[in-house]
Every structure is written in C-alpha cells, then in structure tokens.
Image (cartoon, rainbow, N blue to C red; front, side):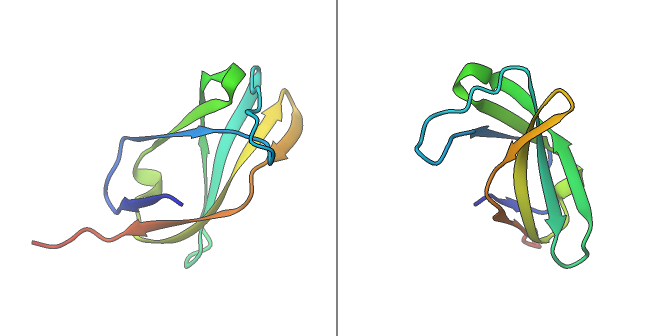
Length: 102
C-alpha cells in the first residue's frame, strides 16, 4: 500500500473505487473520506477526497502535512451519500518513512 517520506506534502493520491468483482463504483454525489490512524500514537486523521471521474469511481486525496509523521498507519476509504453511510474499503496499511539525513 502507500509509502511516503516524512515531511513530504502536496502529494495527490488518486484511487479508483472498485467492487470486489473489479467493476468501478459510480461515486456521483458521494462524499469520500480517507481515514487513517497512526498505530504508535493512536492519532486519527481524516482527509476529504475530491471526485475526479465520479462515474468511473476515480477520487483523489491531497496528502499534506497531516500525514507527514514517520510511522505506520492503518487506513480505509469511506463513501457516503448525503447523510447516509454507504460503504468503506478494506483496511490497508500505510507507511511513512523518515527522511534520509545528509
């Protein structure tokens, strides 16, 4: 799953939301959120995504300094329509590596 260097920011992570059978989820009108938890500190972070190509399930998340601390994270993508929770992705691991010191 994703790996970044600590301190990097402005990363635009693009994801295609698909069902288990591989078909894209039409996310037109949906709100998408990336929720991650730092496994060392328990700090939870939420990033609201943008719809890039909603009919084909393509969304993006701007990763800024909120997820820039080195460590291991666990995350999932959540989809909702209006005030109704729809579904979420499988849980995935995410690694933020420390910067190499020169």
